Structure formats: C-alpha cells, structure tokens
Length: 174
Length: 131
Image (cartoon, rainbow over all chains, first blue to last red):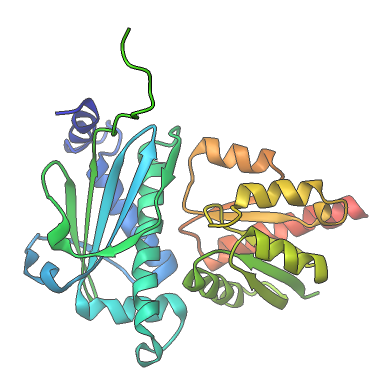
C-alpha cells in the first residue's frame, strides 16, 4: 500500500477528546457545514445501504499536488431536485437537466475543496473540474466512505488517496 | 449606497448562487454583472467599471491569479477591490492571492452574513483610503 494510503487509513481511527479529528470526523463536519450554509438543508450520518446508489447522480473530482487522490459524491435521485432548487433559489419544476448536473458538480467541488483544506491546511493542491459519472465506475478499495441522510434523500461521499503517476519526463536513476 | 458588483466564475450555477446570496445578505447591490473567466471580466471592466469584483480562481481561458495580475498592472482598474471566492482554503493559496492583490478571500462554504461582512470590510477599507 502506498504511504499516502497508510496516512489516510491512520486518519480514520476513532478520535477521542484529546486527539485531533479523524478524516471521518472531518468528512462529517464539512458535509454538515456545506449543506447548511450553501444548500440550506441538514444531514445526519446514516448506515451504508447502497441500493440507492445505482440510480444516484454522481460527480467525481480528482486532486493532485502535495497529495494525490479523488473524491466521489453520490446524491439520490429524489434528493437531486430539492438540493439543486435550494442552491439556485428556484422551484424544482423550473430546473433544467443541465442545472441539476452543474449543481451536483459544484457540490462535489465545494465538499472536496473544504475537506482537503481542513485535512491538510498546509498542502498545495490543484483540483480537477468535476465530472458527472456513475457509482459503478468507482472502485471502493482503499476509500474512506460515509453515507448521510438528508430530509430529501441520501448522500454518499467516498475519498481516497492514490499513488501519483510517475512523470515520464523525469530523469531516471543514475 | 448601492454597489455595483462583477461576479467572475466559470460555473453558471455558482454565479447564480452568489447573486442569490448577495440578495439574501442585505448587502446593497446596484448593478450586478457576470463574466465566465478573466478575459471576459477585463473586457467588461474596460467598458463598465464596478465597485467590487468577486472572482473564482480556477477558470479556463484566464484564471483568477492572472486576472488579479492584470488588474494590478492596470492604472485604472488597480483601485477596484477584488475578493476571491474559492473552495481552496489552504494557507498557501490564501497568502498567494492576497499577495497578488486580492483585498479579501472567502472560502466555501460561506453564509450570506459572512459574505456581507467581508464585502463591507473591503469596501470600508477602500473608502477609508480614499478619504
């Protein structure tokens, strides 16, 4: 396992009163802050029952720099319209399909940026543009994952570190 | 006094959100215009100066860093305050954008109240320096 994955795994250990928050704590805290401040809704940690993810709207975002990895956000079908409508201040029936997708992309962008900034405030990272995808495209191995219930439906976040791709232009040994 | 605002962000839904939050915040907004990147922003500003610029960082065409550089090099526009709105809240990024000339920095998530407070602080500093 690459050292970076060991690092994230270590951050998943439960925290106590005298310890720094774990990565799982940070995901939960950031999700709550983002949903309350910018999407005007609330969330609670939920058991992972992933049947709903097959039809979920998902967005993936990659990051690189001092850390390399990716995050996947899944929003259940029934939650997509209320979340997008709340973000834009529109009625659900006024939404276009493009707007639904763009809001899910923006939500993934905000969540990922806020989580990384909290996990590694001294880091130097660049985020890719979010892209809409399906949860079936995601390999769960090595990921830190949490599901949340919101009044309108479900939300899932998975984040993992990956080994950086070697730069072929870099000089070899010797 | 109502302030004219230019929102610079490549995401149409983020521009709409910022407009909405400005309304909700109680900040006195006059004309509010939008641009999708730094190039569009500079073109608009050359014809229609504004009181304050709210800009994203990562944008295709011309990003927020380059926009701040160009604003700082422009004899007329360098006095227009710019506030960066970004998902990136790492210390290095914030310092870098302030060094490039940003007068304020808002990391997402933010509330209408925190946005209003930041804009009032930045415009208050500008008005004090002009007095």
